[in-house]
Image 1 (cartoon, rainbow, N blue to C red):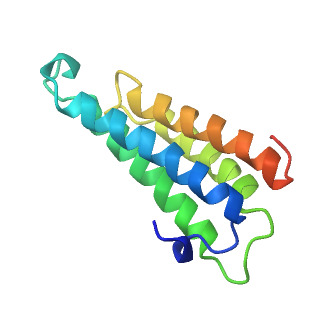
Image 2: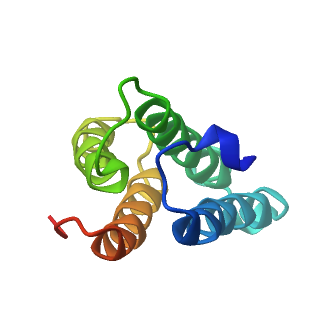
Image 3: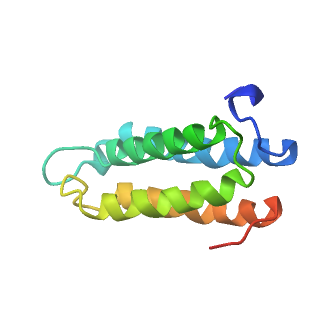
Length: 122
């Protein structure tokens, strides 16, 4: 994500945000590259990680690109991830919970950054 994609984010937080999402993408790719991570239904749980990471990324980008600019974008992103987590719990396709776990990890890491942004942890 080039910096202009995340307007309103403090420059000091840009690299940590990218790293948070990159770690989840690397995790998804590692799982997808191994048959060990295939569930009983034959689907590789890396797909759930990848899909959850993608949905969270869309949420972040929507908030960052909102006009007028959001005052505390990471705090808003954490709130939006809470709603996404609730929806993910109801997803029967994520039977092993890897997508849900991915969203929780993203939420935790972004909440920590939100503290640096000057927002509440939630």
